[in-house]
Length: 137
Image 1 (cartoon, rainbow, N blue to C red):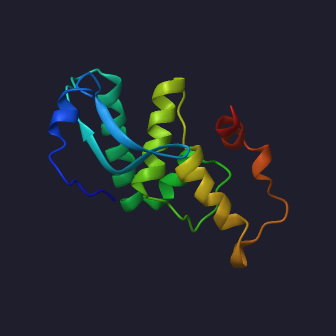
Image 2: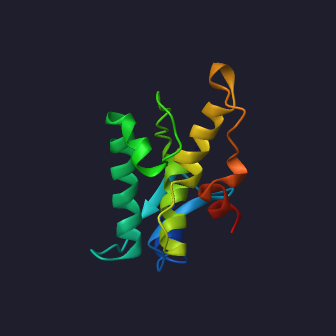
Image 3: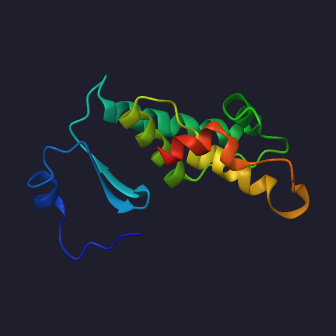
């Protein structure tokens, strides 16, 4: 994901010294493949984002049925996406908008599961879900 041709610390501690999470831009928000965390304290929004990211990765990795707790229209067998990038985007979105978002990583991948292959569900409409609306706002 990244190659450093020189030490990044002068930039991380200088121009980005006041930032808690430094990440590469990747649409729609950040690339979680490589990021740098600094100056984080208990109770900070950044602390919540990182803790929540870890919780979601471990939850969906070991309990795929947990998808139904957060995406009520999802059907087993669950895809239970554990991609750290889309999960981090949902955590960042949750922190910024002060909402709980499982829209991109969890709901988005369950949609792909419903609309492709042998699990095709013609009565399902992604555009009618609250998760779709959250991504549009």
